[in-house]
Length: 284
Picture 1 (cartoon, rainbow, N blue to C red):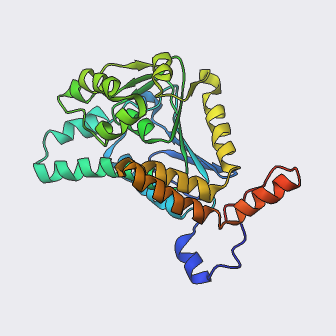
Picture 2 (picture 1 turned 60 degrees about the vertical axis):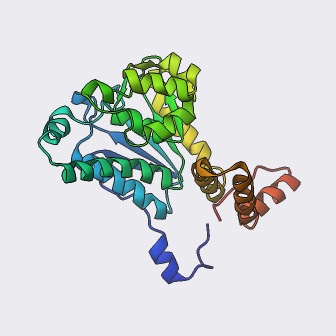
Picture 3 (picture 1 turned 120 degrees about the vertical axis):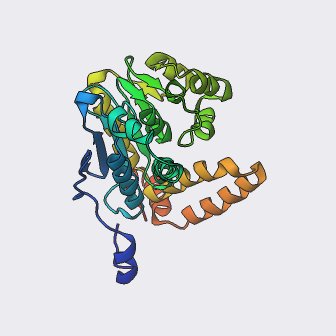
């Protein structure tokens, strides 16, 4: 993408590279537009802490302005995705907090889902092994999910005396797998196996464990080759249209598509078709 047409002041405030990010509580790498987040506490099956929740939330928020990231892969180290909130570093301290601090925590965790849904980049979750609690929520909040036969996804909040309505689960999960199936998982807290998860539509497809990350990154790389501005519009509309009537959605999509028709990528696609070539999208 060429930026010589954009006012430098506007550019400075709204675009920034993120390849050089150095998170403290998880791994981060960017390769040709694909960012990979690796939850990296394999000895504990990659649980989240207060600090990692906040750092993930803030990173996904900053992705709004990233000019070198077009798709994101989220995975876990050591054959597991994420075991949820750390029992000793989160659950234990929570039982000693008062209501204002508890609400501060639950709002922070919900904000992680909000920033994942609001960032323009498609997110691919690569789910192997244990994917429980907040880990299941992070996978749920992603745009696409690849799993394995040994994936075990559990929304186990009721197992610890909490409601299943955590971090948007009661809004998002039924839209992925249906009200009845979501109700079963949220009321019982049972694990959803890989094959069953694919059959239910929770996973887009299953991969061999040793190929999971490479396939997720290949899918993300494929998305990077597409029109990134238009992909961001697609993600926005998929999210916003949950609260629209059909008539409102059709009008919103008409306006969104008209904006996309003004991009150079739309023109590139036409000229490439005329020349019998594959278009090279640049995101403008």
